[in-house]
Picture 1: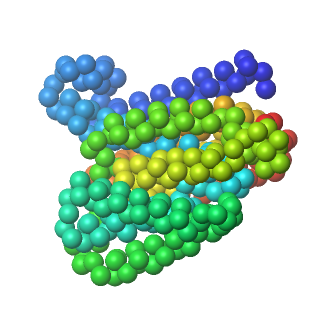
Picture 2: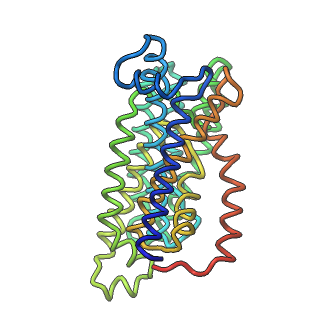
Length: 329
């Protein structure tokens, strides 16, 4: 694809992202005009509009962009690391560990900060466990270790749900299904998204070489052990950030890397990484907007909306991938 075609596609993705942000900020249980929204963002307008835009919609929108971008980039990293198109950010068991930590905090009656701290602790413990147990056996052993740990964490989650009382179950189920209502500090995920993009672009060449196979990577002089563990730890950290912010949000890290490769007809990670980040952020923003408005004033779990959209979308992408020509590296 020519540089002009690539630039045009990036401009279209940017326009799509802007439309997603505009829909999230302007439309909800009460509509806000574009002029009033700009006034509220500048600190003007009436107090109610400022409160809706600055205290409710803007934090959730920024968090959605951050979470979507982080999960998409983690998916890009892991699919290149394992050379497996079905790898996604949750294959390492990080989300399961975070879920166990968060549910333990919720059962103890903890608030939002303590719940996030519990999720963070669970994620870190899981990362350490997978890293230690999977060390020395190559990528296959690491992948299998992550799957086993995730299965064990799923069993722990089932036990905790059975032990919780009825008053705690709703919050626990919402957290497990993905909920951006906890996101009162969206800047963390936003900064994580920027850091993730910088990391993915910095590792674009190693990712391209790794995706081509071990023999080519060795012939290119790439330090396989260092590169793999760096990518693994970066992916785990990114996934932890997203899970702590929004709970278990699925399909983003699986679908968006494939969508980016098909849209740009390339496997070059210098293009795929930023394209996936834009798609992921837009995807989660629109899903969160739908979760807030479809059954208003009730809110649906954003993870459920993403699964409902992501499953048929992934099937369409699979069909497109079969009929499309092989992407260029």
